[in-house]
Amino acid sequence: MVKFTGIGFPVFYLVRSLILLCLVENVLSGFTSSFIRSEWPSTDIPLDSAEFAVPEGYDPPQQVHITQGDYDGKAVIVSWVTMIEPGSTEVLYGKSNKYDLSAHGTITNYTYYKYTSGYIHRCILSGLEYNTKYYYKIGTESSAREFWFVTPPELGADASYTFGIIGDLGQTYNSLSTLDHYMSTKGQTVLFVGDLSYADRYQDNDGNRWDSWGRFIEKSVAYQPWIWSAGNHDIEYRSDLGEFSTFKAYLHRYTTPHIASKSSSPLWYAVRRASAHIIVLSSFSPFVKYTPQWLWLRNELKQVDREKTPWLIVIMHSPLYNSNSAHYMEGESMRAAFESWFVQFKIDLIFAGHVHAYERSYRVSNINYNITVGNCYPVPDKSAPVYITVGDGGNQEGLASRFLEPQPEYSAYREASYGHAVLELKNRTHAFYHWIRNDDGKSVPTDQVVFHNQYWASSPRRRLKKNQPNRQISLVATY
Ligand SMILES: [Fe+2]
Image 1: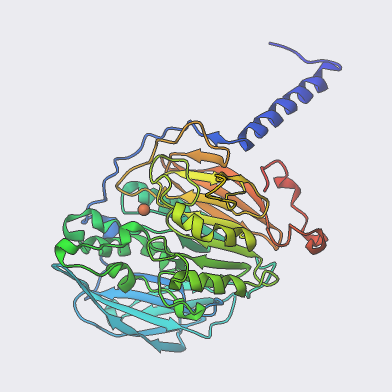
Image 2 (image 1 turned 180 degrees about the horizontal axis):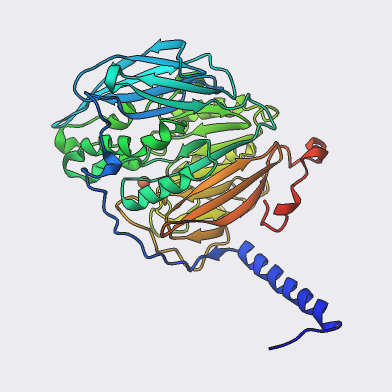
């Protein structure tokens, strides 16, 4: 055993600190985790399991979920399904469980090949007060069910708020682990980056697996909004079954407030919440120049007010920067279409799914493409977003464990594990971010970063002294 005495003792700590600093620098130069999890089988939870249990009572409301109902967070859309009869469309709600307010909604349903859906209800509760807990009740008599939600703070540059980011969830025991881990965080709203139920993995895209998924996630989404984006498993185009429309189940079941942001489609839209402006894009809808999505995005980016909502976040399904062999380059066409705008408007973060692994990029751009001289490679760019892939919710397709080697310079951290991410917007200048790996039942924060806001932190004139970073996070990598 070595004993440190006299001057040797502080020298030891100095040397140790230098070694630790070097390790941090190594992480910042691109890191591929060697973590290998002993995973549960990637098979779906059986339909008769408790996770999918139908609530008690005659034809009770089930698959209850809420999402933001307007542009600025003063409305909520409540959705649920009744399987036998249409039932009441009324939602009773209020600041206490005396329910002094009420609203009536609408009912829809659909068929998909041989499957017929239940009665899908949706009801908008509008004119809500900010930062307020509301209780709501749906169904009648012994089948009535009660829930609650909390509205976000009023829009403001320093409005703190915590988002969870989940993608490619499916309905396996790994999915359950992700959901439970997320629910143990302080997340207030989920940004869902596409691929919901994976019902399309079943014979004839079995709609019963959409129903089970709705019951599976209810314990979170009935109490806090999930902001939806669609993935390839949600397309469900099956010409062999006579199903020629796209996103049929997704669009019937998971409504979005697209009209509030003047979008012509529920598949792409925007909402503002606390200090964030969230833009939802559709990787599997037309987006080239002059298409509705392209025209909408061009206009929406001009609406962004960074003085009011400094955090500009985009969610989509296919990642634009991905160094996994799975789905490699599939986001390239959208990158070519939109990346120059993402840099021009200094987007903070772009979250995607699709690849069943985790990856975070450095701030890079590749917008100088020139077909004549051959310029085409990512370069460090302080105005570029950080791209984060969180397609690791835990669906039945399993992990994407083969990364391209060597690790490209744009890739900061990558790991083939299941998990989810949490983004804590602290104020107009700083956000804490971490990705949480599902480590066999334990919730393990793994990749941790402090993000500087691209608008407020990019100009010294805009910085406020009161918003200096907290000293306790000074050793974490920052961007
Ligand atoms: Fe996908």
